[in-house]
Length: 296
Image 1 (cartoon, rainbow, N blue to C red):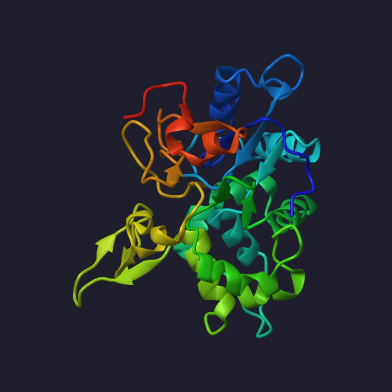
Image 2 (cartoon, rainbow, N blue to C red):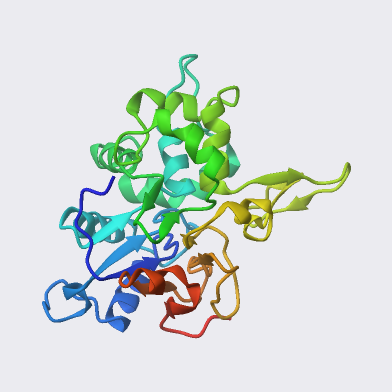
């Protein structure tokens, strides 16, 4: 249930991964200025698709500037923000299980992935605790009526099973955060599907090394071209998938705005849509992609 009144336009912004300067450039490009009443702010709101945080340690990102800006935009009803898998993992990093172990293992690979954020907030500090609490308040999905948004995968059956674990704003109830990291609990699988995307096992003996250097024996499914997409009756915007090339719709009902802004000069991408009339929102051909530099 939305608590923030909707304006006429929505701008869905892809995974930023601490590249604050790219957000600044994108907002200038779409003329979204909170200090200018006649800018796109007048009739529009932003939707951050999650994965605000984490980047390689040597990146030119600014976690705190980015988080402060996004939180302020959400607080003043200029924006919505979804929970991404990186915020989800950050919560696990700070959550103790009943057996005393960390919900997300503090191993070398996980530490490398999360290091830039931990250094920015100073691990274990009040600042760190503050942002983890804010991440916990973020919804796992948002239904805007004629268009929906989720970080990785819109799965009707998984969302129906998820409902008992959610607050009215689609954030996870505090009592269930440990369950979300318990591989024996159904909530773990639900969060994996919705925030990281469904996967399948590779043939026996096959594997690949992902961008973090981890060897994997499972691969992500392009669910928008699979049976799951047949259940989608309204357009869905996602992030997460680090696409390349010129932005375009993935299917008749699914659009992705993650074009790997985390890397080098890759642009931060967003897509916009006018919410009325309803038939305009229903067709992905009416969604417009925006970016400052041409994607590679």
